[in-house]
Every structure is written in C-alpha cells, then in structure tokens.
Image (cartoon, rainbow, N blue to C red; front, side, top):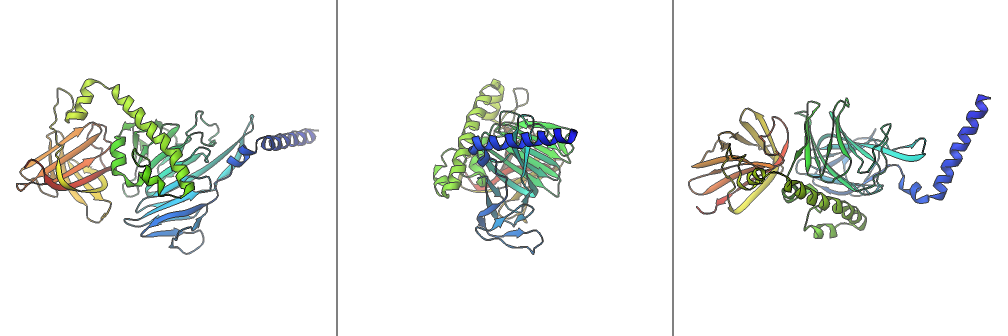
Length: 404
C-alpha cells in the first residue's frame, strides 16, 4: 500500500513538472546546466589542463568542460564564454576551473534550480554574469563567494538563476593564503569561510579580505579609480562604450547587461559617500585623517607619467612590496610609515618623501633633486593602513614632478 502511494506521488510530481515546463518553455530554456565554455580570447601563455590528458597550449574556440582547468602565464590573460552567456576573464599567473552544473528542484514549490562552482586555485578572475545565468559560487582554497544577484536568498544551498546581472573580481594568493573579493555590482553577493562560520555581504564598491581562512570586515574601495586602473574590467566603467563595440555580438550583449549594473553601483556608492561626515569628505579631498590627526597631501602632478599596475603587499612592520603586473620577478621594495608620513621606495628617500591616507586609498611619493618622482598608489584600504600580507591592487608611477 505504501509503495502504491509513493508511486502515485512520484507520478503526480513528474506530471506536474512536465506541465510546468510545457506551459513555460522559456523557464526550461533558462534552466540549462552550465556544461561548457569556449576560449573566447587569449593573450601570450595560456594552457589547458584537460582531464586525463596532457596539458597543451590553448587556442581560440577551444572547448573547456567541467573538471578541465585553464592556466595563464606571466603577463597573460584568457577569456572564457560559457553556454549560459557568462564571461570569465582570467588574469595572469592564475589557475581556473569549474565543476559540473547540477539540476535540482526546490520543494514544495517545484522551482528548478541550478548550481555550479568556479574554482580559483591561484591568481585573479573576473566573473561577469548576465540575467538568467546559472547561480554561481566561486571557491578559493579558503573561502566561497556566492553570487546570486537575486532578491531572495536560496534554501538548502541551492542557487537560483540570477535575476540581475553581476560582476565580481576575486584574487587568491596561494603563497600567502589570502583572498580578496571586489564587488562591482549591488545584489546578493556573500563571502563565507570554508567552514561557514562567518559570512559577509558586499555591495558594489565594497571589498573584503580573507586571511588564513578568517573573513574580515567589508570596506569601501574607489570604483572610479578601479575602472581607470584595472584593465581586466575594461568595458564596465563609464565612457567605455567603444571597448564593448569591439566584442562579438553575444559578448556585447553580456557586457551591456552587466554594465547597466556596474554604472548603477557607481551612482549608489556616490550616494553613500554623500552620507559621510564633513570630516570624511575633507579626508578624501585633502589627505587628512580627521582634525586631530592631520595627514599631508601627497598627490603630486606628474609630467609624462609612466604608470605600471600591480599588487601591493604590506609584509612586516613598515615594510611593503609592490609586484608589477608586467614584470612580477622584479618587485619594488617599499618602506612606508603612515603615522610619520614618510616613504622610501627601492631605498630612495630623495629630497622629499611623503606618505598618507586619502579617502579609500593610500599613497606615497619620493621626489629627487632633479625633479624625478616615483609615486605609489594603493586602492581600497578604506582610509586605514593596509593589513599585513593582504593583496591590494595599486599602481607605480614615475615621471617629472610638475612645479619643480
């Protein structure tokens, strides 16, 4: 008798699901599993680590399936376009893979759910997801980033299709066991440690660091500066329509969907900044940290600036290192004391050296007697000295100091 009841219930469930998809074919189409990606673009050294096969150089239009991996070399980049129209940009010195998509049903309302997990073993990846893409989690060896971009939270760890486009950049440094997450859009973007003990939610223009498995607190970073300096995010910032026009029509469609959300996040962050106190705005404009602890203005206008982007690490005490993107084997050693407002870059103190915290960023400059200047800019420190061994994006600029 129980068997007959169970069999009847199963038949009713299957019948209901078939009816649901017959009545709503668009829903069935949008619920496709994430099964494959195509190598859309590549630059310099990009390798495919195919399951049960010998690794080989990647080629345009190569197909990547679950459990395969993409590895990029120094000064290299790969872009993957998935069958759900997600676009993943994998930066240099990175290892990226994805697990199979799963189809499940959330009872009792019989809503079809997908989930897939992107794996970033090391390096940097930018994940761009249009509306209707598969609900996504990005895992590093110490954290998980859940990208839902929907108005309702999932249950039973099932990820519904995204209702809104989303953009997130994730950096994982294997040697230092640190992860940094940058949210470029508003939505349901959450970061947890692998044990699920702590979770934080990010809005567009916020970042969080995970060090040795411990999730920090969200901090604001400068979105306009981000789009000016991070080439991986090309096409998402203001005034970058020409960049999108150079892409293929399917990728253009994804970028346009995502860009609506990134530009909205820019406006929302600007509104949040309006809510800060007068002293905070003065800090951002004048390089000070409140009336009781003034900091010198260190921004200097530079003639013919030569700008190199890279990653900044504060190592121990007042010591730090800047690793340039174009030559990671030639780091720049820095000694910076934000309390005293001084900086030494590659052992050079010059005739003038200053360091300070200004709004979301930290910076320092050294000027020599002949007017040569070297300036370091570190993004997303939220007006505080950078934490030890946490990666911060930044730039190193050289040139001639104007007015000298």
